[in-house]
Length: 178
Image (cartoon, rainbow, N blue to C red; front, side, top):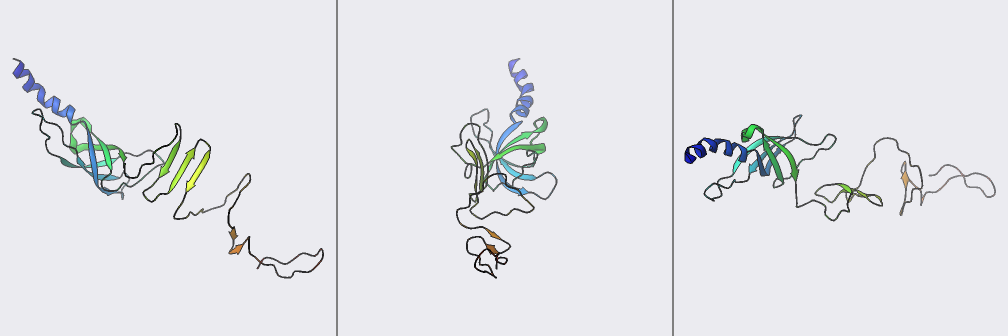
């Protein structure tokens, strides 16, 4: 009797075991409205204690609105199989321990990439690390003091080393910067 019940329940057990899986990203397609990834699903332990085989699956990636990224091969993922069917998987999280920032204080937030570029919202203000430089497109306003440790260049003219034409002694005004 128990053996017959276990035999009937085995497909349900398998479906439940297949619902959530750890995976490793092997390919990313970022060309469509929802990103797709090819992942290698981690092997499930078998009833006899053996490891079982890994399987490959293509899945859509659900990312948080306003944030997007393209993971490197080897990043780790969590895949949810809708209805326990791994062929209909959705990746709900991807992380990469090779690049993840560590040591943040409670409540801090950071954006980062594999090149060391970081926007870190710390307890003391915002810290931006831009080893490759940064560009602002559009107009901007600074309300407060802006301290620059080297130079400011506007329209190709250095604030530190520009010269003026038409300089006259006394209270006269010089010409525009050269």
